[in-house]
Image 1 (cartoon, rainbow, N blue to C red):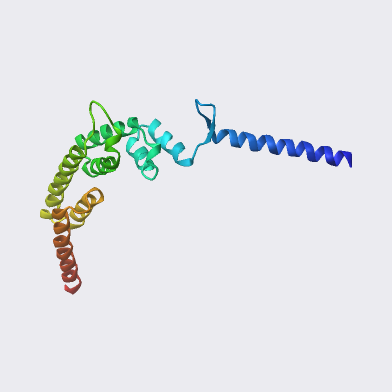
Image 2 (cartoon, helix red, strand yellow):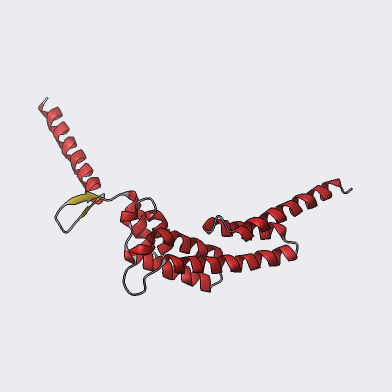
Length: 183
């Protein structure tokens, strides 16, 4: 009986230590001396930020804006500008759009205003409209549709993109109907 109790105590201590280790890994020490549980979201945010994906970190913070900081906001803005200069207008537009709710969090010199973000989203949309029109004129209708749809991911009410999509989809539908009727 003593052996059984001793085994149970040892086993209980081992389980307790394992639980403490797991708990310690999920906790972080704050300067005030308090423990707080780190959520999966903050861990994911930290990993994205450390890898330089500030737009991704910003997207993770979308549901809990308190997890965001000015460094992430400034980094996402710089990343969006870089994407824009590389000609990746859809990704840049999405990055600028993701910044809108956080634009007030970057304070002081170099503040990111909503009007500046709107200008940059508009510039991205304009470039995508040009690319879509080029594809449309060359008969690459599926590519034109995909390009114009990418505008709607960051500017859902973009009238020119909506009109172009409507026209192109009708034309594509008509062409497919003609192809089925042709022998």
